[in-house]
Image 1 (cartoon, rainbow, N blue to C red):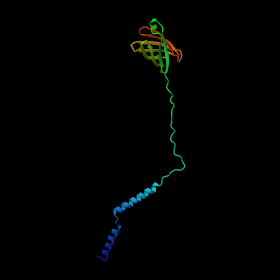
Image 2 (image 1 turned 135 degrees about the vertical axis):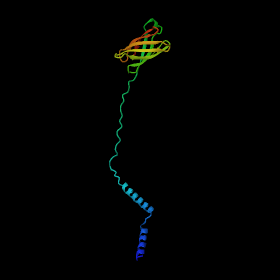
Image 3 (image 1 turned 180 degrees about the vertical axis):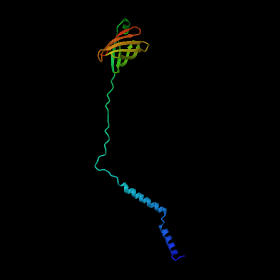
Image 4 (image 1 turned 45 degrees about the vertical axis):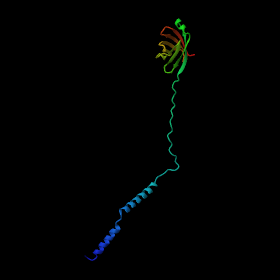
Length: 169
């Protein structure tokens, strides 16, 4: 062996031993560097001072117009022929739902009548009311409203009695 060869090999091995760093130590060092970098960068958030938080948009509310309110009128039916005289004066109600139609009720003798009242299309106040009785009778009326709350007309039962009708008042 040439002189100094042994010594240089021993020196190289000693250097290799000193230069070799275990992997666990390398992992710990990298983790510390990453944690320090994250901590240093997290403090770089800019917070404006003295400015109010953005206001929420104002809530919007809409006024809804109330629908028409139904009106109920008394209806009085007075006998207009001999067949109706046995019943005398009869009372009933007409409920106008404010859209061209309504409900019609009357008590004639022992029979209760219920039905509808509608306005004739294109007329200013002319209408028709029909009702069916609890015992199979039918009442048919034609009327004219002279104002928003007053009207008059004629009603006839299918068995022949006829009545003059007054609405409102």
